[in-house]
Length: 189
Image 1 (tube, rainbow, N blue to C red):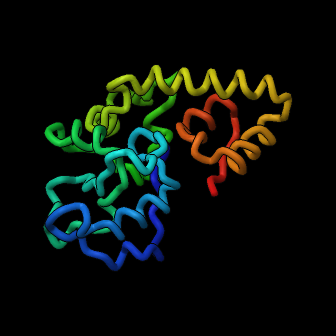
Image 2 (cartoon, one colour):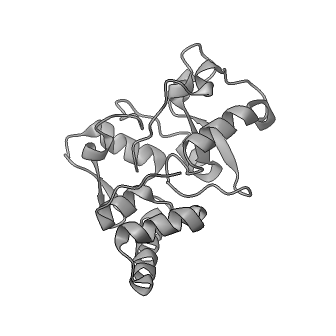
């Protein structure tokens, strides 16, 4: 998981989450998707037009309260959000925490706590299911495909990912895995 960056100038800062169906919050969802480059905040998988998707309230205890705000909202795939609903435990590391990538480390497709004593980081891993479903295996297979394609193209790593970002944007996801495995920093467009 890559740390989610929230922008103080986001239009979503001035919005309220509206009770009702998804149509009531369509504009909010579109803003979050755009800011997240159409990547699920939790799985880092690309969210397509046909995916079920949600405005996720990270801390469900804040939903429909005055404290519920942009900092608590993320665009996520419905499947990931649905699996999360009953697992909330404090303390928990927030997806925007500046030290998230130091406290949760990437290791060959899996996400692990850097320190066993870091209960908040472990609770985040468990809450959003970073290692559930087939996500670790999907990340490994994705990275292996990128490595094979990179070798076939014969470009430098940075040229290869620039090419992907320019021509096949929807095929660039699992950003943290890419950055860790290839030793690069991606700038999403």
